[in-house]
Image (cartoon, rainbow, N blue to C red; front, top):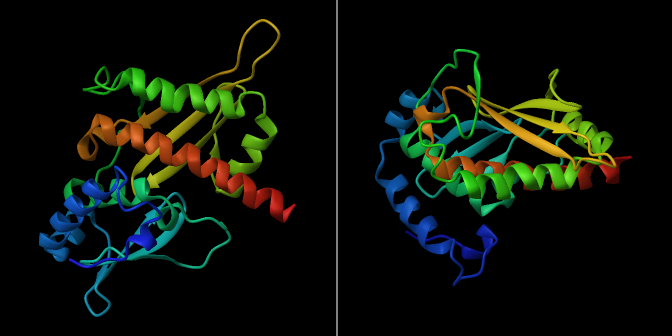
Length: 224
């Protein structure tokens, strides 16, 4: 299946190429109507495109070539167009995810059924990175999450909830550092995540979200 490598923002010989090609082939073999019904997301037969909301922006994703375009909004940055890991994560969601409703409970990564599998990686790539990046910049964190239309929640010193895919919500919590203690953080997931995601997916998800915060931060600074 032909596609333009330049559109994906990675070098031809990089480690992302093989998983992209693998999942793109699987995606092309799927029935788009089955995907639409299973995930309860619209599919327009005439345009051959899914409509999917990701981190606050509505995107169109074409089938079978997975070309991504956003619907106009005020976000100013579009991770599903810019980040190859976000594309692969979303393709995996379309391939095997399920529309699901949380009970309203939130869990840490460790509390997931397979939480121990990538715990060390998740802690380093996501928990510590979030604390290091924003634990002493709470005002920046609040401004970025407000721009992303995140919902403030009453945890820690600053905390917000975002929806990454329809029905799948994440809370990011920060405790500010001081002279005695370094800043710390926690990331919570609605309890339906294991329905659609594996351990590695959620570590990648943390990478994508925290990387997006930095990009959205640049948008906020440019507009101020």
